[in-house]
Length: 397
Ligand SMILES: [Zn+2]
Image (cartoon, rainbow, N blue to C red):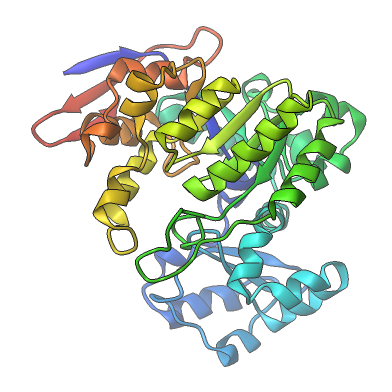
């Protein structure tokens, strides 16, 4: 049965990265490695090209395979890993020798994920035509505004502010990019983003126990380093968005924020991004501090996808929306906001996993889901969500 809704405001995506990747060669469309190599051999010899959608298991590429290629930056389908052809390494060696040296080390990549995402976005390049095509893609799936959590630089800022969605794309960025922006851009910046752990896909989220395969997860900062980093950022006068997926990372962020709060160091707004494994005790501390939880209902699907690395008790603790709303008192749209991280964009996937979750504690009503996203500004034509309970499927029309 159809439910009308106003196009939503996606509170966590990566506009300047994802839109730049529009139209880049995509290896996920290649049937085998030789097809992938043929595609890459046709790329320009005199400049760096970005190729996305590479799956190292499905499309194995040897060192010899890469040696004959033009300058190519091959991005893993998860965005958490990359390969460089020798010609690309030579090109990047001048500007970023540390990246050329470190990029084959997974832990280095996780620690420097912000740098990698910026490199991808800049290499791919954001043009007005790419951004317009990407925006039309969002409109098609019922999105009417979107936040960029990691602006890739000044060029992307200029393209975004010239688009027809300029006032529908608030953006955040990491301190290193912020500090290099012109004052006018800094004034427009919604806030600063800090990462504290990795991701579930790469088994680098910092949980309070190792992954089933023994991987320990990765805290990106020592407590004292994080405390000093945040205290230093406070002087910029901006809001703060802290990426923390695992309960160990969430606990560290709360410890540091409580400590700063006691010293009177308070930010205009602090958002905790993802917080998939927040515990009830941590949720109460977050509420006490007045933090906003910025979560992604579509990642409830991780509880179905990651049984290979997380035990059942852990899978059940992912995205504990009932605990947050019913027991701790978070209010969707106020201090509990929703986004997609582009995995994928649109209301359908988030609604499918919220209405038909693997675990009851993850359930959200349609009203709660829509309130958590909030309506995009302006007077946009309403859309319809069609829910098929028998097939457990949802689509936007
Ligand atoms: Zn993100």
